[in-house]
Length: 197
Image (tube, rainbow, N blue to C red):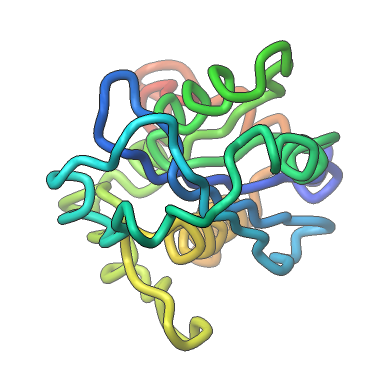
């Protein structure tokens, strides 16, 4: 069995402007190399269209806050570099993957692990698998750098990285192998239904 730490991962989180389809206003990327969580990179981004009131109420990022921020074209190369040669991890990953695919053009999405689906499979006893509920239940927000708040990209990416490591190391059992991570048991197996993204 191959250890899950044999791969490099990058945990991503995006915050949008509330439009349809959503445009990017903030992005964070957190590497996990050799099973260790690295330092977050984050960018505020000036979107093509304004941030809606609903989105501002969620993440607190205002149009004034991004007025002098770079456009995505300005950070395109840096974002590509941050996600290169790594397996992607995100909570409710289809949202983050969709935004990255729209913004990065011909970028080929790598293998993806969705911590929402992993949590449902590996910790079915938990009453909620929303990120905020998991942060509380699994104490994922302890000892974070000061100034980070929920629904901002750096906070969400860091707690998602902690969630992923906690789920795959299964501190209450044994670490998952890469094969177990990629190939969940069939429906009715010990860990429940196959729900990887």
